[in-house]
Length: 569
Picture (cartoon, rainbow, N blue to C red):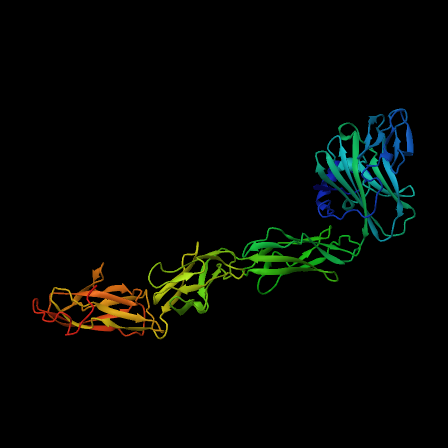
């Protein structure tokens, strides 16, 4: 609602004086203003018993406090004798209207007029400030001049005597605000500093003086009348948070809603012109405030804005006034976008026997650019697709409230070292875990046959080169990889496993725990050694085979060195 305030008082306050007074006005309407605390019977004109119409008719007619229905509002009207018909005062459901206001220029300006009035069943109290407010609609544009000349306005009376009126009150005690098209809100304030005899009497004015032609509003319709009584010099009793629901903001960003409080006295009325202190935590999660000390306005309201600091977490901002019950605002700083993902804990470098679970989970923590943990972010864990690797409990896991995600890992059947990774979309650098699959203590690898033999250059050795791997309980160990290696130069051989031919050549142990190859001698005569070792397994000495390449056609023995062997395959 737009608010305009009254001008400096004078007997005839003209439009220029009214306009000049606008800059000095301070009283505000609407917004967070406290609801009226003095009941005004039928203040909204909804009572069917108060419906009726008086006035109009005979030139110069008048009446004082004439009944309108069964009350409580009454009407007073007057017309210029022999010149003007008095206005019509009518109350219909929801409104009270003063219509037919006229003016004539006969040796000067003469106006008719009237007003609604009601005497309340309460007396004035010394030390109290009485504020009467009314909504009014007019047939034209309502301005301060019309109020100053009494065309529309309010008054407070006692025992027939006017204590305050919008026609005569100082500018700081009168205000005019725009509510809608041709609808306004008028407010009159009066301080009672000494005892006053009589009850509170409210008037709704339509008593123009010195108004003619375009300056005269022909009618005024009142729709809502309220009255508030508060202390003239209120003492702060409580700080009330306006909308104290928890609000959140990303670290480093402003909160959407301002921190607004209303300082009230013991009766719940606003306390203006007091210092309000806003306090945020000095360590950890907190906020940067636009002000830490704010003076309350006429409505007792003080406001500060907050921006989340760079630490994520929940906290409260306290608001206090000396001698008053404080208020708090619950706040939450939320983490920013993921900026890093880091492996941590005992699982970053660990080993486990093949086909068994790793002792520690793989833990990752996601942080924003300020180092705050970021919850609810999907992390992706991955391991090698072949060779020594592991089976993970999940490939994608969201971070928890502490920004942590975790998976468990079970080593596959192949020994060896490898790397597991964790990454987050939008974060360029993944983090790694150094894992190793080991063989159980007591695992053995030994020659199974073909240990020493001759072969003709360029031909196949008759006996298979065989390696046997056993578990600690001496049972066959299937599925392990054995790498056969021959010299890279001179007398040597290549290997054949029935499908592939190469040197070196890696072959898996079968169900019997054995890996075997056939050696094919190269064309160079001489003695040499072939080794076979478990791929990825440390601490296990290789099995050594002694071979000799003989000249073609010179092989005398057909079964190695005079002893039978297992031919390949």
